[in-house]
Length: 432
Ligand code: SPV
Ligand code: MG
Image 1 (cartoon, protein in one colour):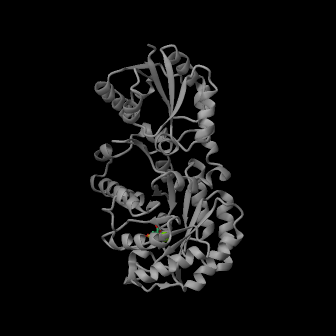
Image 2 (cartoon, protein in one colour):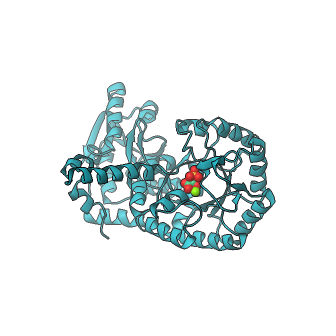
Image 3 (cartoon, helix red, strand yellow):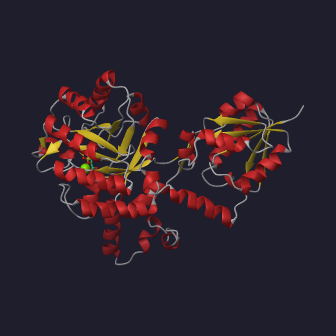
């Protein structure tokens, strides 16, 4: 009987390296190619530039492939359980680096089900690296980047979003990959926080850092990233100004603006009622949403309404009334904010909101109720989680400690262990 051979492709663009693997694998028996599904591909690598149907068609057109299946998880448990392959074929690029967790999973499955792992030298020519880099860079183009947030909301259980406020934090959001029990993971989107963008400039978070300056921050981030951007638009300002902001943000490729229903001098929500802050009227805020939506030129861009009722202790009923009114006015999503230590009021809101509205995306920012897990948020119907300030809060004490240490010891060698090696910092940024 011919052997059953299986190989998984976690890519959307085929190059000679993949064709090499197919050529060799097909000689070992009947070849099944697994294609990693979209939701896993974004955790593993990057957003696909081809749909799963196009990817299937592409592989099917290669003669040596007997069967094409969709692999629903990065780990191979389901594949072994379902297909019992005799041979798993893979490039040897997964021996080192984060991908080795997946290799280990294959080895564990072989111990359980039997089979053999055959690894071929990975083809990594200059030309292949260049092509792959080019494709990735194209994802940064405004027309490609803008609509990706909506797509991610559709395909992912939750869109994991991290705060960025500069090129360097953008790079961290873009490139950080970790190994987990279920494979690799990375952030899906970026949040340009008003708090952190202001702090970066040594200013309070009171809409003092104006849009021109915020756009410069966005540009720095866009230069070095491809992931979609959610912009913290504060109150959105005057309706007459907000329409211009929507046009600009949409044109440059931002995916969503979140505006909060406060009026007058805006202060950071985490002050709660410790400072005077006024909530906008439902009518006026709906007018702002309607005006923003009316000037939008694509279907890609989202205007998300942020409700401050829980922050200002105006109660759950007020929050719900506003949420439904804002959706009615055209909001593409609702962000419900809280500064409680526990997620109880957020979950109450989600439950009541979802009773009436099953589809409008829900966004939360668990800065104070930080014990909450993504799993719990998913169970409660949340679509986007924003980690809104952690990079800034991590950097500040690290920088302060370094400054203090140098002052104290009048030299810097004692810091060596905590610092990025010089060799790494000078080669951190790729040249074009
Ligand atoms: C921000 O990050 O600027 C926010 C979220 O608006 S919060 O700081 O919690 O108000
Ligand atoms: Mg803000």
